[in-house]
Image 1 (cartoon, rainbow, N blue to C red):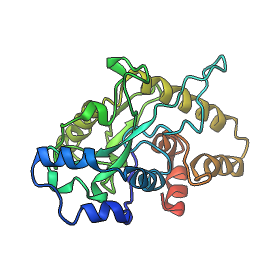
Image 2 (image 1 turned 90 degrees about the vertical axis):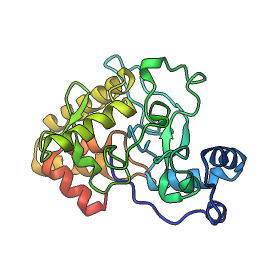
Image 3 (image 1 turned 180 degrees about the vertical axis):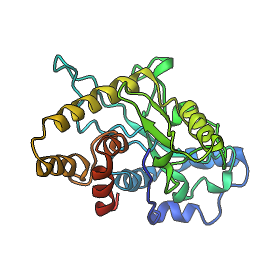
Image 4 (image 1 turned 180 degrees about the horizontal axis):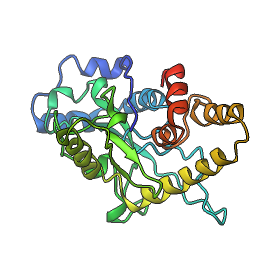
Length: 245
């Protein structure tokens, strides 16, 4: 999970936020009636560099992930606007741009996802806590997670105490970030990067590789950007800091 820097709301969303709904039922009806979601979706897509706010897969599958047989295992899953703090819990933030992100998967059934592979906003649903859920709107959210070579994400052992580790563990569970689908994609993508790192014959070649992998291309980032940054160590962190990512 990487931190999302929110910008200014689209004028249509902002106008709806002047008199926001105050009850869960009002929030649901008002959101369903709102026909200008596409503009906000585009803003969120750009703020997130084309990545799902929770899983960091490429929303448009711009960077296909291939297995050892060169078969594509990633696919386009669509996306939806996600209320980080659910509108059923906090209806006042229904039209708040600072509470909206793009989360992967538009329609679970249409995309052929089995139950165990549902992740992100569709798995989170109404589950949320101001203090215990690690949000991509937190500037330090990336520090809560560690990505293993087997493709799984776990709490970062460098977290200061068990309470912080519990936040990471709960968030992984709520978002199903270890869904078999995600684990397979993450493992495959990171294993290929690891091979490229081992092949680098000089420090400059490694720097060039890191810059290519971590830099935006036409406003989009490669999938699992946080995991790639971690794999590239201090070099990856330095480059992200220089890029403002």
